Structures are given as C-alpha cells and as structure tokens.
Length: 112
Image (cartoon, rainbow, N blue to C red):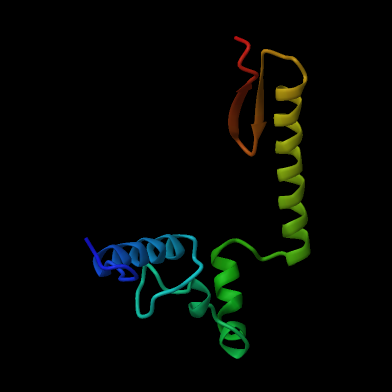
C-alpha cells in the first residue's frame, strides 16, 4: 500500500507506455529515427527534388495524364461503386452483382 498522495511508479509507467503506443498507432505522435513509427510525410520530395524525378515517378505509376483528369476518373469510379452498393442495400433486393474495373462484387441485404 502506498502512502496518501504517492504515485505507483510502475503503474504510471505502464499507463504512459500504453497511451504512447495508442498515439503511435493513430499517428498522433512519431518516433524518429524509425522506419515503422516515423512521420511518412518527412520522406516526401518537394520543390526542386520532386521536379527532378516527378516525370519518371508518374510514368512508372502510369499516371501520364493531367492530375485533374485522373482524379475525376477516380471520383466517377467511387461514385459508381457507392451507387451500386446503395442500390443493393436499400432497394429491397436479395442481392446484386456489380462489375467495376474487372472485379465482380456481390452484395446482399442479409435477407437470404
């Protein structure tokens, strides 16, 4: 038993470490130098460094078109997927099969 007003150092240490671990997983805090717990934004290229390699990187990712066009395509695909899922879940159907970019996905309402 601890005297009144005293803190159990071991229990306090466990609580602090537990909260630190949770913050690391949420990416609220970062640990450096570390590959796993470091800030991933710190390794991003910017300015002249990015300009020097951007063409090769974008070509390697098959992103040669304008950024706005690429993002608009992603928005359309995401919107189509949401509409298909929403139709299957809210339309009272027993299930629906959707094809999006070569993937087949079956959604059900749970009434089967």
